[in-house]
Length: 502
Image 1 (spheres, rainbow, N blue to C red):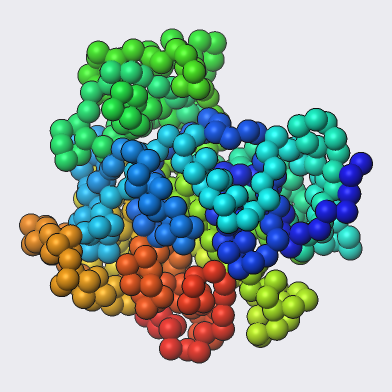
Image 2: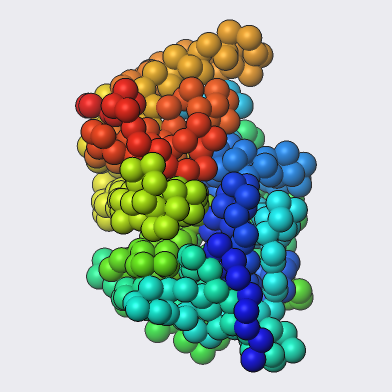
């Protein structure tokens, strides 16, 4: 056994959550080891991003230009055949002024490429990345995590120690229980997803051609993602009563589901399933939604799908993963830079990680509660908009509250966000077009008060990319609590000026 490796942080898992937390900790100069059991690029599901990831966290990571140049499909919103309305309906991110102009889009990404970009970015920043390494155990001393035991590609066993261990190993995590945490599955979202890839599928009409299309049918709902000009990701999310239909022959089950959903059948009328390469098979995933009883313990923190996951209808997976990575990095950096157990600067370890968990649970809870209502398929989309407004306590219009929720920015981390973007709009063509577009959506693009005194504050990161720390991103959510540092990479004690008193 090889031992003696010493780090500040060990991250288990190289997906978006792991790459995010490792990069943002390393940017503060700390020693980080990232252990990934596979070799990148590798296949992964979860291909539809939200603007908060593309225009917020990507800037903090320094990968926004790489994402821009990667050739990913641009999506301006989402299209739904859902609810009482017999016709498909579309929302655009540009309806919300917080996402208008240069931040009014996201990407549909091939996760093999997207995740590889993030992992290589971590390596470029100085993270020690070791692939084909399987973590088998978390090392503890006096109930505190202090390292991991892992096996490398050659079968050699190693031990490495660190002040903090981050479990970013996804829904299949084998080590989350080391944080004295157990996984509780939703009694509402007990679904199964059957998914695969097709060549030659149709596209929606411009400008919605890059949108994700979500279509309800008798057994559940379909996602239809224009992944590339040639390839479409298609998945059927079905309830427990329909799960038996998937057993045996997944391809046959998919054909049956498609035939029972006229809109998807029409979109795939001239398409053929991909039969080779990483997209050449149908896959099944069960138990979409769960939440762990705790997200941190002494010396250990859970991020991304290792902590929680909610039904994918609003593409929140990568958003929650990268956002939790940011929150965890802030807590870790605050503790590492404050001395033993975060004693300096008035921020103790318990307070730092309670901040992480409180914000993360709020964001997860918002999506979960709204999705429970969204699954009441007999309601019209107007009902969904109203429900989003009620949950976010938004003073804006119902449609604006809905768009901000599904765009990942409903947390309202800054007051005067519209004013800040208008100052930029005065000097840019894109912002001028945003204002003109707002006039075309007079009932949906009004500037309301910052949404969400009950909501998590971490996802207004687009504003930081546009106006820096002046956007107020990461402000305290409790009087005298913690707020984000100027560079967004740590927590600092709030002086009271930034507390949202709504």
